[in-house]
Structures are given as structure tokens and as C-alpha cells.
Length: 408
Image 1: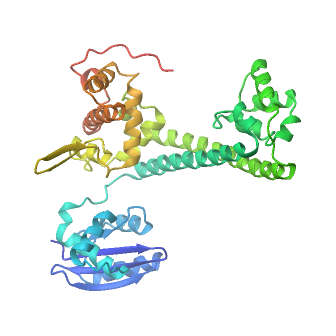
Image 2 (image 1 turned 60 degrees about the vertical axis):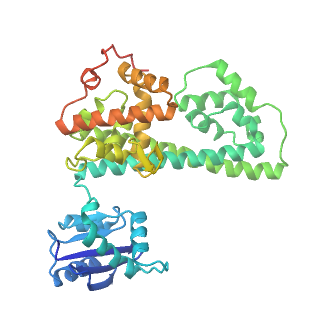
Image 3 (image 1 turned 90 degrees about the vertical axis):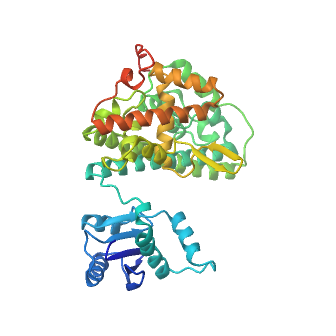
């Protein structure tokens, strides 16, 4: 057992710290700021009570804090404890519901003192792996934010300009944003000439297509119900701003994707992950980013499957016994594995055969994909553990390997 354990309850602007000895007594506590001075004070407090980086575990309810980065760099073993689990520990000691930052810091230290073997420390992911994870997550966040803006734009256009949605049902297309930037209201659409429309289509990479130009002009110039002129002008101004934001965000997504692809290509394990059928550069980067490159993080394939949420959960009590999908999981990895399994249906005949067998056994589509993703993750874990690229004949020995179809 460690001589002392440390619990840190983090908040915006400060952190509460508790140092606990082997007997469960709080021997030191303080509140530190989030800067260098606070980190120096924390190190001094730990050293004052005999703690060393090699022997002192630190519990905190996050893995993204700058303080966590500094502690890991200093050699401490940091345990990012799940807030949900910490809440259950809190109820174990008190049923009144009282809570304070100082008490929570002591509680985190006590969790490690009594049950450290039940919790996972921070994985030792390389700097390259952490950079890939940052890019993969921010790329996905940028896509979600971009879609939010497009949904707001769609809702706004429905209020005064439904012709625009008839012309461009899919606002994610670059041509839609480029053209609507010139015609953000019915009034401005009526002044849009063929020449300007063709120039706008060329700017977003569309070739000469007279039927398409005629179709768009017909849709945008179509008569329809209208808002009062002042209201239409106001809504058109708001739409123009959303269109400009969506255009900028689309360019940002493209830049993040280029950076993500470049960072993935430079990672030592990129060739192994990319060799799996169905994993393109972006999806492969997301899978590798969430798994990480710490070889000791997942000692078994089952551990990785549970982390991704593809492994089912069995609940058994008395006469009740049923199996259900896992809810507590890494949702980003689970989402990436879902689309990976979907993509393999056209890239691996053996994977398709497994999916069809699950469907024939009564699984619905998502359950069959989850089962396939569970199989794929186990095989990818083996490839990463042994440093070997994917081979479909080895991965699915019971199925003859057929020629893969050409990529679309």
C-alpha cells in the first residue's frame, strides 16, 4: 500500500487537495490555483508527508485537465475516476446528500486507498498518440457543430424561403452554400442570373451542366407564399450570416481532416489499423486515437471490447437472466466501430457472411453490426498486440477469401 494517497477535486479556477495516510486519516489538505504556483504547492504538500511520484497515486475525476498532464509528466500515477462511481462511494459514507469540494477530495483519496486495484490508471499514450486523439476528437466535434449550423439554417429557410430547400435538399453540399450565399432570400434569388449561378457552381468544383443550372434557376425563381418584405429582409440577413458561418466551418472541417490524415499517416501503428478492411484514413484514425498506443492498456481482447461497448452485458438475478447492449462505454470508439462494421459489409465477404448469419439468427440490423464490430475489434487487438497487418484469410479462417470489390 502507498504511504499516502492524494485526491484532487477540480473546479474552474481552483483545485481542492487532500492527502490521506494508510490509516485513512487526512494528514494534509489545501486549495491550489490552476497555474504553476498551485502545482508547485501541490508537490510540496505531497513531499511534506513522505509522498514520492513513484509511490503516490493521485485520484481525480477527469483526464483532460492541465494539472493531470503536469502530474503524469512529473512521474505520478494518475487515476481518472468515473464521477458516477465516485457518487456511489459518496453514498457509501453518507446518506444525507451533503457535498463539498474538500470532502470530495478526501473521498477520492480514500477510493484509491481502499480500492485502487479496481480502477484503471491513466494509459501511457505517446505524445504522437495524444496529438492524434486531439485531432480526431476535434474533427468530429467540428462536424457536429457544422451540422448544428446547417440544421439552424434549414429551420430558418423553412420560415420564409422553402424554394431554397427544393433546389438544395442537402445543405451539406458545397454548391448549396455557395449559391445560397448569392441568393439568401426570394428577392435576391429573382435577381440571380445564369452567368452568376454558373460561376458559383464552378467555384465549388462543379463542371458545366446546363440541365442542372436550369433546374436550380427554376426552383429558386418559383413563385410561393412570402413573408412581409421587412420580415423577409430580416430573415434573409440572418440566413446570410448562417451561410457565411457554415462556409467557414466547412473549410475548417476540411483543414482538420487534412491534419488528421497527415498525423495518422505518421503514426507507427497506422499501417496495421489501415490494413483492416472498411477502415479509411479518417475512420482508422478515430479507431486508433480512441484505442491509444499503450501496449499494456488492454491486456485482453475482451477488455478492449468492453471499453468500446461492443461486448454485451449479462444481468442475472433469481429467475431473471438476459443479455443487453453495454451503455457505459467509450461512445466515440463505439460509434467508429459501428461504421467500421457497416463498411466491411462491402469490403470483406467473410464479414458479410457473419452479418448475414446473425440476421438469419434473429438479430436486428444494429445488433448484428454490434456483434460484427465485436469480432472485428478482437481481431484488430490481435494485430496490434503482435504487430502484424490484417489478413482476411487469417481473420476469418472458416470462410474462403474472395476478391475484394473495387472501392467506390
